[in-house]
Image (tube, rainbow, N blue to C red; front, side, top):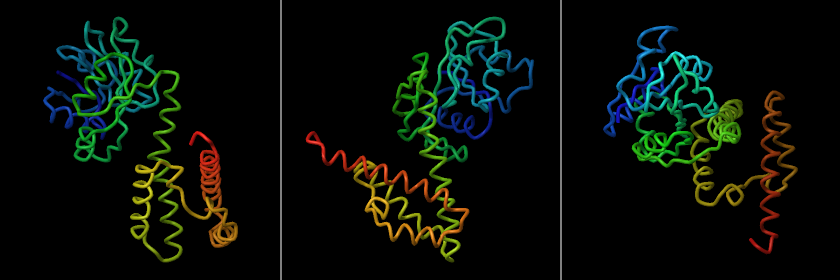
Length: 254
């Protein structure tokens, strides 16, 4: 398998390390070539696939600068973009296009490379080569329909980005009480482990799930006003999950 990667950010270098470690022949274009350069125009020559690991806003532009080549698959690793952004190539349409998006955070090339070949889920669409690459990385491919890409990516954003932002709120609230974030991280890890073992409904605990209104009011009174919007959003989500759990428990089919 010969793969040329366009883009040398965290994603591009993580894929370079991961694919190289599993035996693929990989070439990295060290930066997104400027418009009209020979290197970008010839990116599909002599390879099986070209993986675009550039920012979403550049994917269509970069794909359009690559000369189409018979049998070569052009892929992007965006979670939200449709396949159609890859259709236009230099001198003609790209005949084979695909998407390969890892459900993994890639904080740096070393950690990212390990995560990409450590049983990660990959959302795939388009040409079969995307699935082959996921399997080459010892990953678990999941097929995402074009109509569901935005919903899929929203779920991924909540799972990672929103979770990090939520822990940022934990850090601020704990800090106001003179406590470090580190003291609360085992609690967060335990909750994630519980979700993995039991599912969200059964893993849910806390005052919102118990309808402990006095405790919720005490929280509100203690929090800085700037934290209330995020806190109330969490309470609403917990109450919704608790209500769903009650319905499930009451069902004769549960």
